[in-house]
Image 1 (spheres, rainbow, N blue to C red):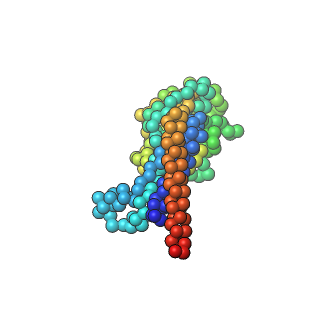
Image 2: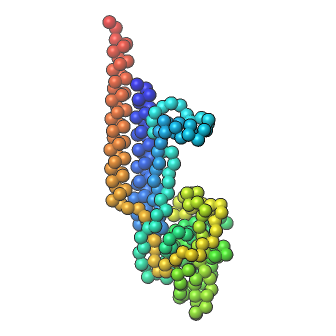
Length: 247
């Protein structure tokens, strides 16, 4: 009976974490370049079978047949595009990611909301210098410039810089750090074959209808686990009371 209580508890905790991930996806519905997260959960039995198939003798934990969130997968599917007519907005069609330097560290983002600081440096709206194809900051005379589909920037008809597009060997290695940024993966390589859209922003790839459906399912499962926990608690209390009662 105690094992049943633990099983129901692990299910409730898992659904609570699932709801947190879904809520974050919904909250970033209007965040440019946001990539939704998908929580992946597993059971003890599934984990055990995986270890056996891989001939891995590592410890898999105690035999409590419950659930837990194994990891969170980021969905890098292309989001839609929204024309903004703002000269400092850029979007990437296809694979690729912008490089932004913040406090000496290079971060990656699909959010192309850029701005110009007081010195004319091209910066990200959430902080940091936007880097060119050589990994150097970009400086412009002002917002009166033109851009082409490969991110080349022109002032007075002369090319002055090219926005860097980079790609990770494995997008699954990218780690979210907040504000739409990802930690720099190893093996980043220049990527010039993709298309940059000027005066456009990539929208979040979150589908509100889908996320709301997932939230409803997860909330119902959480309620079910809660009811089971309450039922087991009442049964345990009744059992202890009956056993302790004098005959």
